[in-house]
Length: 111
Length: 114
Image 1 (cartoon, rainbow over the protein chains, first blue to last red):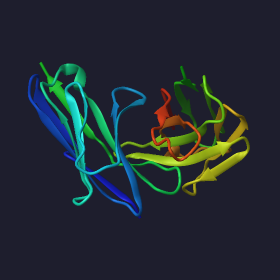
Image 2 (image 1 turned 90 degrees about the vertical axis):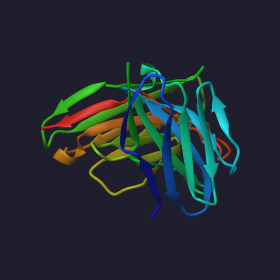
Image 3 (image 1 turned 180 degrees about the vertical axis):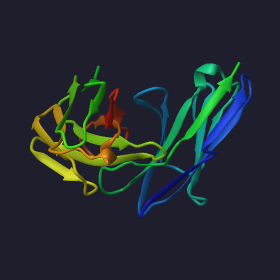
Image 4 (image 1 turned 135 degrees about the horizontal axis):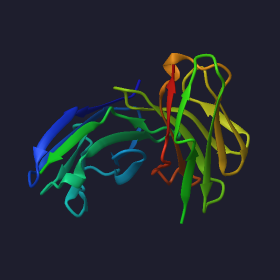
C-alpha cells in the first residue's frame, strides 16, 4: 500500500521566519509528487515534481524532489501571515488516476 | 477559464437519511472527475473517479456511490448515511489524458451526520 508521510504535523512560526516542510513516500512505480496549499476550503496547486534534484520555485516558495531518498521538501522564506494554511503533499503512480495524499502540515504564521 | 462548483457548501443530516452532493465543471470538455473525502485527522482520500459519462471507478468500499449523468456533472450519493460519513467532501477535475497530473479542486461540502 502506498504511503505518504508529512512532517511536522503542525508548526507555528513568526513572520519573517523560513520554514521547511517535509514529505516522504513509499509508492510503487512513482510518477510525480505534488504540493497543494489548503487555506479554508479547496486545496490550490503549488508544484508538481517529477525529476530528482530540480528545484521548482514560485516567489518565496520552492520545492525539490529527492528520488533516491524518496522525499521532497517545501521551503517558504520570509513567511507572512497569509502563508498560514495546511500544506498537502500527494504522489501519483505511473498507472491509475489517484493522487495519494499525506495528512498535511498545518502552518501558522504569527505577526 | 475553468471553474468547478460544488453544492451545498454545508450540510447537516441525520443518520439513515439519503445524500446527494453535486459537482459541476465549466470551461472544459471531457474532464476526468474525482470525489475525495477529508476526515478529521486524516489525509484526503480518493473515493471515486470518472473518465467519462457513465464510467465510475471506486477506490474504496463504502456506503457511498457516484454517478456521472453528464460530461461535466459528478454526483455523490448515499441511500442511508452513517456517522462515519461525516467529513469534508471535495470534487476535483483534471484534463483528459495521463500527461496531465494536476487536479484542481472545488470549494468542498462539509457534511456532518448526527
